[in-house]
Image 1 (cartoon, rainbow, N blue to C red):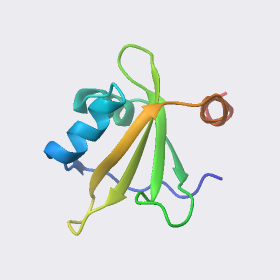
Image 2: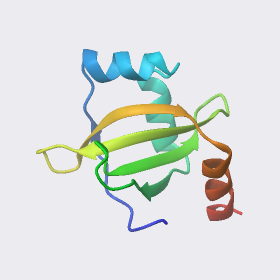
Image 3: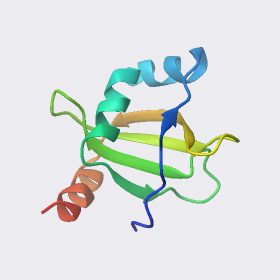
Image 4: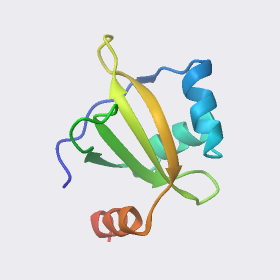
Length: 98
C-alpha cells in the first residue's frame, strides 16, 4: 500500500549502487528522472534492504521501480537497486495517477 511520501532532496550514489543499478539497465540519470516526474512511493516489504520502492517514468517513458533507503543525512536517500516495473507496479502507478 502507499504511505506518506518521504522527502528526497539528495541521492547518494557510489560505485556499488551504480553497478547494481547498471546490472538492471538503469543509470543514475534515470533515477533522477523518475523522482522529477510523478513518482509513487510504496512501502517496501519487511526485512528488505530498502524502505521504499519508487515507481515512475524515466525521461524516455520507461516505467521503473527504484528501491531506496534513507541515509544518516536528513533527506538524503540511497538507491539500493532498481528494475523495469512489474505489471503490478505499473498498475499501482496508473491507479495513483488516473
